[in-house]
Length: 214
Image (cartoon, rainbow, N blue to C red; front, top):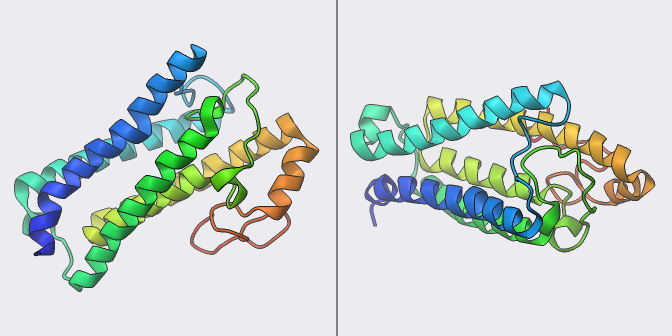
């Protein structure tokens, strides 16, 4: 199948599906389970988190606009780079894997899941995917964004990827400081043996992965 013909309708469909299954449905599920909102980026945590929240919102809006423009205008109008089809198909494979990891990690996190740092105490989740990496939701989302970049390679998507990596890196460091304050030695021991985004890489006191953190 032609990669361009596949990507044109698949990109907006996948974007909407990701927003539904990774954002909307988990938020509704958390509200029904706890009575609390999932989105706390704008109202709790350090001031930098509010800046990150705005950046995340703008990034998600840009992805939606990019998907719509790709469907409406086509690849040539958006200036997509000519790369081997195998590279673009590999991008779609990453999107599928990242989608699954994100949704599965959210389910495993249960009532502890939030979009941002909540002032309410949440349980420390260390099992399942969280026993492999400390931030599997962000790992999954970074994988999805990397996949979209490879599937629709351009200067715009590369800049978007760099922006998202920076935002995630800043947010994760805020969350790690919060969890260390909240759970103390339990989180410190957990972070010493489990990597940040990649198994075994980015443990507390160990070197971080180049290109993953900032």
